[in-house]
Image (cartoon, rainbow, N blue to C red; front, side):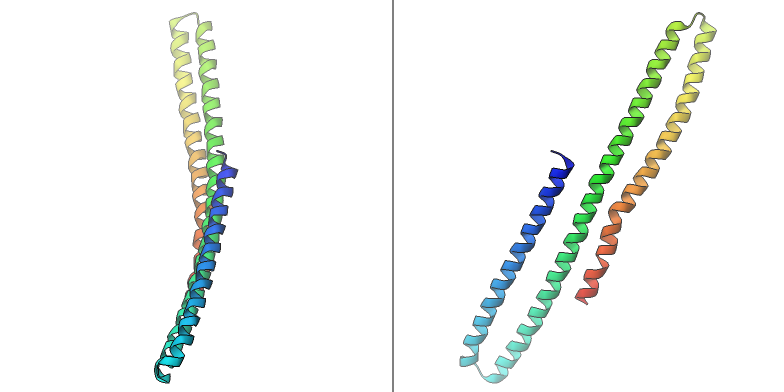
Length: 170
């Protein structure tokens, strides 16, 4: 399954969950209003006032939590997209490194076939090992930098996206 398809499915599932949450909230709100109307005719006004205040606080808290959930969902969607993009970049880099290493091995095999004496073979092997050590060192630095970049890009939406919901909730 491709990264795009996975991303689209995750986004569709998230949107569906958000719609379901809003529908449940609307149904709950309607039920609470019906209960309040029923209680107004049967309970003393002081209890009704207390119930209405509690109901108003509950509605306010529900609205805040819905906003927090929506902001958090958006932040996680963006982080998931960044993670997919980063894993694709990382995979491409690994393929590039593997291709380079395979070409180096084939070059060594070709050169070994052309060697005439044992000292030439030893010199070739030592030179190849030195070259491979330098290449591996460079490749590890590149992978480390790419990993750092991917982690930073992936966590940034979560870090920045989670500040706003907590401001809303407070």
